[in-house]
Image (tube, rainbow, N blue to C red; front, side, top):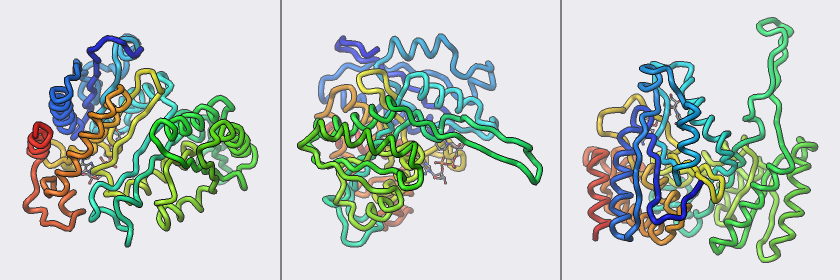
Length: 364
Ligand SMILES: NC(=O)c1ccc[n+]([C@@H]2O[C@H](COP(=O)([O-])OP(=O)(O)OC[C@H]3O[C@@H](n4cnc5c(N)ncnc54)[C@H](O)[C@@H]3O)[C@@H](O)[C@H]2O)c1
């Protein structure tokens, strides 16, 4: 439930490893934004993660799930993954559990260049690289249906089923068109492999045709996923909104992230529009640098901007993005970003210091 009251309650699940460090910065930045734009947020820190699981055996209890669903407006999520839990049981239960139980059917990934030096593409700049990917987030090859027959023998058969429902396909395509309309964009490209997956992606083709007819002001285009991968590199300026299935969205959004600076800036929203949604950076818990004040907090910060947008604070979200651009222009960033900017990583700031510098810029 998303409350109508002025105070918006945000559940913070920092999780494991650098999730803790980047969430701390992310929340401080959101507090500074709230102050500047007179917004009222109540942050509720929740201990879910590997340590909590190892201590209590609890991953995502029914009570916790109900609390998140019914009493919070959004979930701000760090990362999960801890070498002490090699099977990732806690992460699967919590992250996938929330994704499926809250029916977060949109995975929104912005592909936006925030500094001209950060793209590996020649002759492409901030004007050319600015689009979003709508990845279907609850169906496709990720439903975990399938099995093995004669496992471990020379005759083994291994099957994963790909699920595409009429309802699921329609709602993600519609969400992409709605987003285009609401954000002043004019082009939606749907991508599939209907030439091979004629049944499953034949459904995508039919639904795309039907839904696009309801949006005559939006240019509707189709590309097979392999062609789209090439076109995203050759002519990224041709795209505003890309909508695609779970597996292709997973792969293409990582390609997109690398076109605009990589993991350090990659933000994502898992949305059920109008309902409680989950916002997380694309990176993981980075155990190799955890606890060393080396993590780049900007993906978490930009994830915060996506959350601001979803909570109805578009102006504050845009302001935050411009402040991150200023920070990049100043080179006041962590070592990974300095390397991407072609600058000396020796002068890098730590996680906390990046946050402090950004908050200074926000306060103006
Ligand atoms: N959504 C999630 O919670 C999520 C996503 C991916 C991986 N994971 C989990 O995280 C753990 C580590 O996985 P991984 O190493 O494959 O991926 P990772 O994203 O954690 O790290 C990959 C590399 O990028 C670096 N890196 C990542 N984020 C960074 C940041 N903010 N600042 C600076 N450097 C950063 C790391 O140091 C590492 O060298 C695993 O347990 C994995 O399952 C979780």
